[in-house]
Image 1 (cartoon, rainbow, N blue to C red):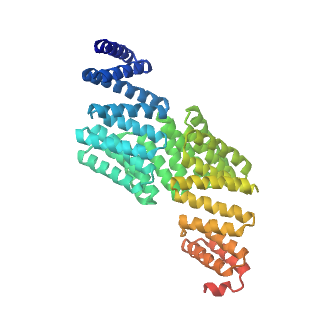
Image 2: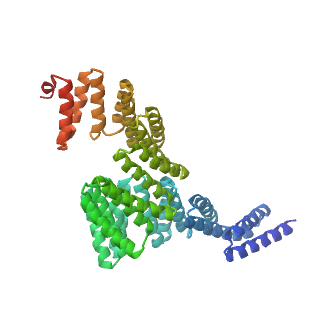
Image 3: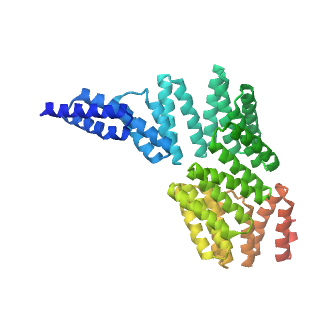
Length: 471
């Protein structure tokens, strides 16, 4: 009986191998899986191991094919099976590369925690087996995962280790790569001086090496940092230089889209909505052309914000609803929550407070589910505004106070302002004065003369004894 079963398994293996060698991966996989099952059943360890090796390779190639086609969920399914079989076989040589690709697939699915875990495993194995090439690749991706998770200090540590290693080796190309990645986490921490320093070093090195791709990318990175600093004119200049190079060399449509989106944002910040919309639309067209759904959703959301700033909440809702449909399709809960919040704000600004509150509550629930305290604070603050508009001051105050608890009171002048106004509407002057003083301290420390004037005007109109209170 076993001989017949073994012959059956051998035949399945041969057929599967033929399909694999002929590039027919989907046809090869079920044949090899059947062979593995039979070898396991009859205890033929040699046949099982031979077939497992082949199955692992087929699964890996299928996973890579799905990853390249953009079906990241399928890529994860097959690459994970390949990793598992590799671990069962006790072979580590291939796993760093497969783990890296598995991490990249998770990254595309916005599952940055699992991506980080894959990259960390890849770094560890690659270092243990002495594969420096895979270690470099995994280390770069690990740093990016920490960045996407908001763990900026860890990201800097990983990229700095990479930079130190490559300085010792004298590899200028690898040093440039590390410098390129360091700017983002420094910028995210608000250390703009250091972000500019490493991006400028990368730009100088790219020009010295004749690397047009990283020259263009570094110019864009410098633009992003200057944008964050509020120097939008200089940011736009860097964006334009970077975009011209990236389009000239035809490097990456993704980089082109991102640069167009950044230019739209910069023009939005200068109040030039027409140019902002033009650049967003260019980016949107390319995102749709390349089927980049995640970026399409981001740009749709940016267009929604632009039209909100123009006072056209109805059109803003249309853009945000298109974005919401895509992020739900992608199962991106963070973006779903934030888009729901933006929709809520637009609805209550149109006077539809019930719908506005409903969307904001959904947004709040997702923020709490994800532990996103910053967005939780944002949603609570705007819920307070909606309740205020309905004349429900007590509910509004409750939301504002929770917003301060979850956010950063030292920065949230909007919520402090609303709390002061809400307490004034209830006739509670003592509480109004308390929150106004906190608000006033912030605007004075930041040199915001208009903000200071707003505080003084509100209290001067409401409280006859206000000047005595602050003296």
